Length: 330
Image (cartoon, rainbow, N blue to C red; front, top):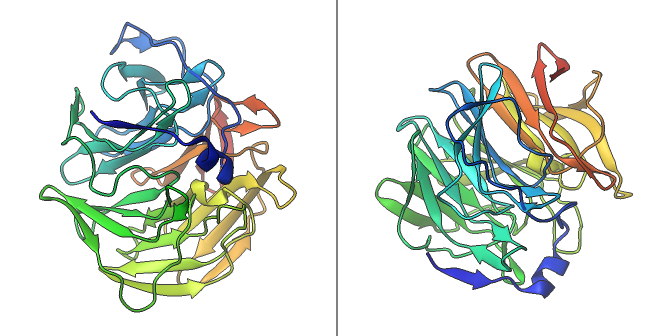
């Protein structure tokens, strides 16, 4: 597997420097029920495996460095599925593919080894397999991706490529990666956006993001096949909040992120794509946090949120959102 040196100046140019650094000690007893759960972390990857009805967590920045274990939360139990395969990292992506019932991991970086990654891995439920040496678009920081069920493909957008913001759109199916050529209206380059598939509409939505100087991008786009349509410029002005958008029934939920004064937020905003408007949710929120994971469980129509950080602290709390209420799972 090929790796490249991470450029210090590039790290300084992004707004998403991890609240914590360095690595979780790997547990050797994999695939056994555990009385523990993942250590506090942020910038980890998460996905919901609807076939096995489990939340998957990989990597992230912990107080002891980047983690390299794959965790499962199912039936109220945390289990380490694997502690070998992709190298420990943060700021990586984990995408569940509903048709072939596999999960895919791509990209990321490691401060511990001063490395970044352009690799692509497949988790089949039992073991990791690396697909090729590298993806064709190379390493980029803070990109976004999702599984597009309508077109049976993984869709990837944006990120920081060297010192330049990307607005490239790439797709993957079992025939490999391909780039969609820009035409018509097209989103600008950005990092830390959120790309989310809507089962209700059958399309992919792009939410917010940031420039390298921290300026928040507040637009919302809809991708129908290969065509983008700009919907509005009313994405809530909360930096990094775009990391935390998930589909919820007919709508979308966004929670947390940095406020304009760089303080963590606990705000929840709901987006209705039919009305094309954002509304502030009047619910009891979890405490303020940034860079957590948020996944949707479509079977039970609920959201699961794990980890994140606030004011120099990291969390390993697991929260559930259902019937418009947040409850912490002990």
